[in-house]
View 1 (cartoon, helix red, strand yellow):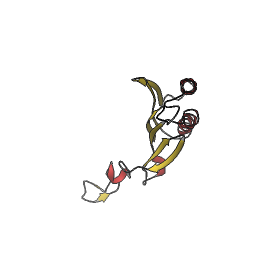
View 2 (tube, helix red, strand yellow; view 1 turned 90 degrees about the vertical axis):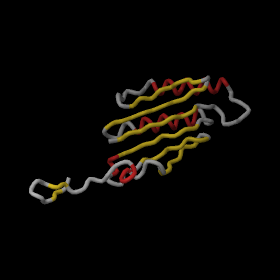
View 3 (cartoon, helix red, strand yellow; view 1 turned 60 degrees about the horizontal axis):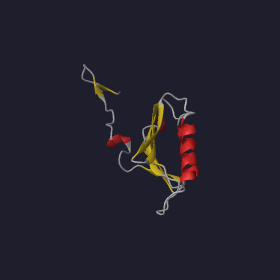
Length: 145
């Protein structure tokens, strides 16, 4: 299984002096157009406005990262390029990584995307899940799950 959950505040500039409204509008239009290309039923990207500020929220829960995670990667790269003042986080879990599966965090700040380890929910075992132990059978012996 692959899942991803993220939020991003969209800004044209990281400057306190304000933004170029024309560039912001162009960047928002590009984000909206890219979101409209989503054909994956298990990826839910949303462009929302709250209190006059634009946000992208994205959620995904699917069997594999292939084809889905790459679409999200492209969305984030486009936001970083077109709206370099944007910032936010994407949490991803790819359980195909095996028993050592852990959340990875993509961080967007000042037009740069970086990866970091998750300190809150990882590793999955023992942080959020319990390892399966031996199963006791009716005959008193034990087997494994």
